[in-house]
Length: 53
Image (cartoon, rainbow, N blue to C red; front, top):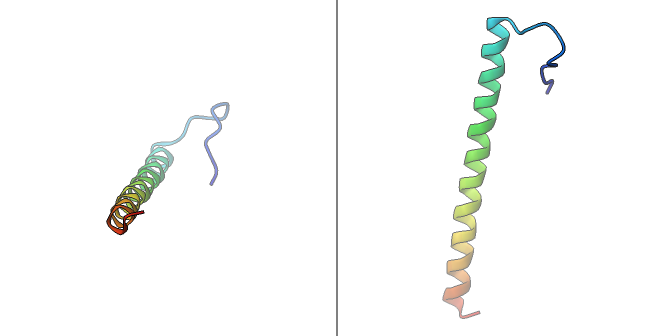
């Protein structure tokens, strides 16, 4: 992953769209992982409470 260097020339519209698309894809993946972790912790909690631990 290469990030845009703010000291270099400005990005072209195509580069900017590609950069934003990568950011959006990363954000969606991270949101999915966070949601999965929330659900996982919820089920672990339910199992622990149900088993009387």
